[in-house]
Length: 481
Image (cartoon, rainbow, N blue to C red; front, side, top):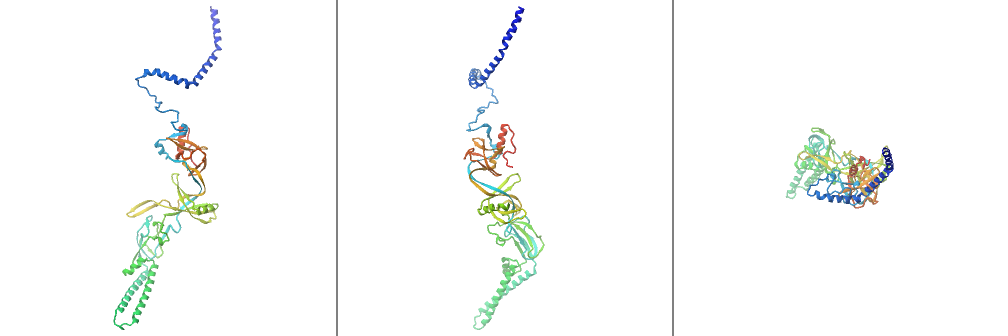
């Protein structure tokens, strides 16, 4: 018995040793088949099991799985046609406001290509600045304005007490002639009133009439002399009517016609510089102050001689010129629809630069009242500011032109974000041209005309999409360095 038992065990193990690998392979194969057809056999089985368990759980509260979102279909496209979760974002109202999202339709328009040149704001020579001088010698008795103050044409600037002997003598002679004319006129009237024939010879009356003509000639000459001394028509008339010498004159801001300015020019000045102080004695011709008018300025562009033909063409055809002002927050402001005033006729010998000038309308952005009826003003553009001028050199019609913020860049790919219901889907596009302000997208069907895309905030949308996918966002994506 002992011998038989010992002999059976090795035989049994030996008979099973070759079957274990085959059994294991069969089990694995059946498991793979079951997994492959799980979507077919598992749902019916699961429903059957739930049907058996449901009667037992009636009347009992069901514990809710926190990961089971009621009404939410995981892994589906939420009902948006052509919607892919990996290339789409759903934004809240707050998120749209945070990135400054703007939308617009994709339409065909004319694209204008520009060449950019450095420039600087400057005043208009001969028009922006007016020098006020003392037309009469005298002492400054009153200053009406201070530096930086807003001045209107006709506003008083200074009071001068006349002290020039020549002017005083000229006024005295003018008054004396005025009185003599009055006396002669009365004498002629008296002689003509005598009715007795032959009582007064006609020769006497004619002599008085000749004398009146002579006095009138002297009167006109003396009047012109006073005007040449710097008195105004109103001041001369005042001396004639009142019979009194003029002791003090008021210097006023010049009118348009006095400084060769057209009526379309602004009547607002700024007192830029005071050259006198109260009590100072002046001679005729001494400077009193400088007034400036910044309502119209020039942008002086700096081109090279090979750009001369482009500038002349743009000036002749009055093509709209754009001027760019850099802001302190790394943004740029573009002023459109300007025109070239003129192009210089000389090239600077050393730098080979050719200067041209663009008319720049200006406006007051801040007015501060420092006393009743008196103001300081701040103009939007100021001489000396650095600018850039964009001169149009070429244009193409029927192009898809969008703002530069409407296109996001990721490596060699460019994307726009098309609105799809409450989502924004990322769409790859081909870029034909790109500058600081606009992008030309190829009209190859990748984006349909009339569709709505994000016109701003594309870079932020691209970063949000990459974060959603778990990848790090490229901080330089969408930027044009």
